Each structure stands twice: as structure tokens, then as C-alpha cells.
Length: 207
Image 1 (cartoon, rainbow, N blue to C red):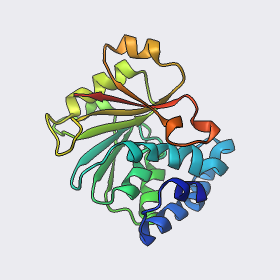
Image 2: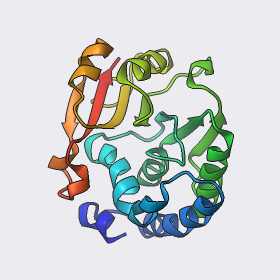
Image 3: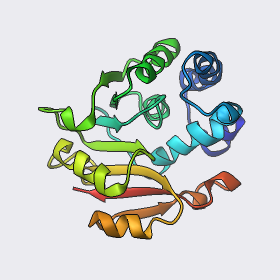
């Protein structure tokens, strides 16, 4: 919890309470439905919550925006971002229903009202458009972009053009080359000093 406050100081009392409740809720649910590696559960705030919030450190989502979290798993990066941006709508999608059960339970447990879930493959979503697609280590960039592009609005009310924001790690040169995109690459290690964030990046592909 302290690690979050080390980098973000302007949370309301309610947001701090919501962040505090994440650990007991995820610990309890993870014993029933494994959505976080057992060895990582005690590093929840660093490896999952703060990692997700690197997006909030780099992008300003305006009130009323709609964001889709592609392959959300246990709710990352969507749940921490939904806490950070309470007036932005987050639609969390995963092809594994039991993972969304955890997302729904955590959202309800901390009183998040700006989260919805959908059990679906991303390519099956039709007739909806979003300001941004967010994801964390779900698939190669070329696939993420192929799935994301049809879901993006033409324009959005911010300094950023609608696009894909993906958390990735390691050497991404070949993956970027194969995607035929020209993303903006942001180094998370320049934001957060912990060892875990070395070779962790935010990849932003604009529409």
C-alpha cells in the first residue's frame, strides 16, 4: 500500500480505502480461483496495482470516456485504473468466465460503480466503440492491434488520439516490427525506481 502512496499522493479517502481493500479481497478470491500467481500475491501492490497505474501516470483519461480492458484476467490494469479515474467507464472483457467472477466480486467489494464485465472473445464484440483499449501482456502486439482497431472511436476529447495502450516487457523490437505499427514506447523504469520495472514498457499505438 505504501508503494502506491510513494508515487501517487492525491487520492481521496475513498480511493485509499478501495486500494487498501484490494489485498484482502484478491487474497481471499485467489485461493478459490487462481488469477494471480501464488508467489506474487504478497507483491500485489507493486507487481499488479502500481504496474497498472503506470498508465495513469502517462495518460489523462477525461470524465465520461469509455475504456475497454482486453483480456483483463483478474482485473488488471482495469480495476486500479477504475479506482484512479472514478468518472471513466471501464468495460472488462475476458474469454474465461471464472476470472470475471473475481473482477465482479472485487469491484462490488470495494464499491466500484464504473466497471462492467463481458464474457467474450474480443473479436466477437460488435457495435461498440471505445476511447482506448488497455491490456497487459495478453498477446503479441500485431494481434492486439488487429483486435483493437475496429473497437476504437475516430476521435476522443483528450490530447491523445484513440488507441491501444499495452503493458509489455522485455525486448520488443521484433514484436513491434512484426506488428507493422509505429508505437510510442514509454519506459516504466523512468517512472518507478523498483527493480521489477526494469525492461517494463507502455506501448501506445494511436488509431
